[in-house]
Length: 422
Image (cartoon, rainbow, N blue to C red):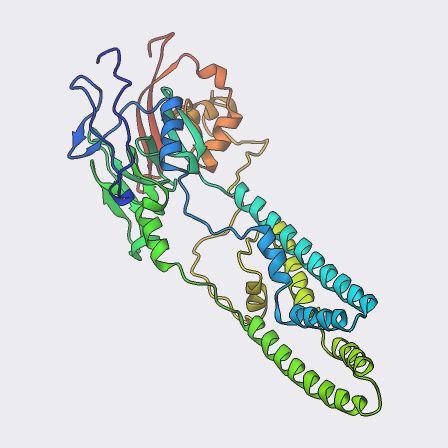
């Protein structure tokens, strides 16, 4: 391999993002093999190259529509009930009743401010919870395997697909791989049985590795993935919930009834009083007869519920979904097995059934079978690698590794002690 083998090509955005692939600007002596327009990466990227590609192709995440906070505040001032206050304030202004107009405006902005505060506070809590639940990916950067935020994966990255991990982006298994992996694609295809993937097979974002371990090269990220394109097709306009339809019906009935009665009162009063006095009294009566803050109160109540749910680890993407969930009497789930925290702890007393062995030595053996030099891939690896004496493994060399196989229910590692050559 030449001394400049790290220059394994460049990524250039195409006019059509759907055709975004790796260019084949590689030398014959580069440690890379190519197939058509796709280039397999066997040695990983440097941090500089990864940052450049992140700028070109963006984050590895699906586009999410974020409503600006100013729009949330304005929308609270432009709803059926607030519109009634605007009309009343304009009438008070027209008859030069500035005191009542000021009071109406104070009520208007006070209601909107309370609703805005509670809604954005709940939204910030949900956003923080989403950030804490972001998946990670194991990639090779600067010659070392490291666990990074999956949103920072870029096309051309060399990723490690191991048992139990979610595939972070559309990838192809490297052409020099001799092993196979089984991938659960039920989220994409509905197929309940895992699919066996071979060398050069394409693995889709959103699927999960259930057996085996291989290296793969990322082909598409973000919205250009199969999962991203499918999500874009299924994207629909926001619909009103049952609660919102109910509130609209209530408001229409109340507004219609109030306008009718206030019109009758105005006609009666104008016969014996001036138009200005009759109109001023009618406006006050109309404001008093309509629950102007009903939407603000409802939104605030749902926002408080959303914040409480986020504290319990539940993500609420739509406030009205809280009311829909509250009206549910039976919830059916197809989750098999036991719901856990995905954390493991080792007890202080560990029974050992072989003479000469102890908890210390068993943990060393377990670490040797878990690729101790790489980031942990699951809860069991995390338990072992955080409990073992890592310094005692400095003289151990990993010769071969068999990833976890559900059929034999274990991982295996072939190692050599460099001190004793055993």
